[in-house]
Length: 353
Image (tube, rainbow, N blue to C red; front, side, top):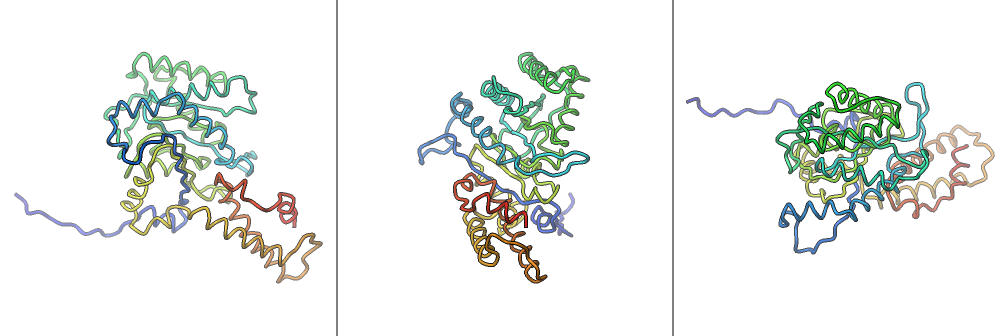
């Protein structure tokens, strides 16, 4: 027998290093409480069947989809425009990670129900992508690879996927199906539409959560258990650098993943990594924004004719840059719309300067 050997690390490069070096963006995370349970009861102490039944209750599904639809423009920054290739686009797009094919199907139908009768400009464009994945880890520590081949799906799951692809064909003028070649084309098409900011949201189980990079993705809605490497992998779909409009990856959790997130950051960074990986609390950004805006109003009260001296011009640019960067972060927080004390007219006057 060989004697045990110990190895020393020559070098490590973690997500903390990548964020510090500005190779990827930090994360901004919302935890949305969708199920009220007694404090003495923890998810792990409830049987899997009862938990699944509660999580897939129609009332909860309706609440989650309602929340996504209500806050979608805010989370994906649809009020901000930028140039992508040769076209001008508004905001970003998103993935919705669900716990199972059953859940993905239920959410797809709930989106259809809530958007029925809406005009095309009122509806979100929704796609769904799933396939057979052996050895799926229910705890989300690793994300099972889904083959781009639906042949091993149950007859019912495949029939549902065929119907969803027909919806997609009608929406985008394509002709895909669940044959091996047809599904591969469908997968590649959705990949391209995500990268080009053409489709709004794609519902997935594990597909697109590992190894897929689209800089136009900025938001991940999560209704599945994730932890450790699987959590960091899934979250990291959102934090690829694109432009000055995209300053963080936006995560919206409909399950209590706060401790799992803290643990994963500590595991793949260090115990002090939180401040670098996650955005600071809302109150800190709001306080900085209000202080900076007050200073701007003191130094440059409206109405402003022109700013002639180079010193004043530099001062104005610095203050306005701080205001715009802080607003860029604050607009993703649900509370900011009601807390913002700055009239939009004043802000536009300052922008015009």
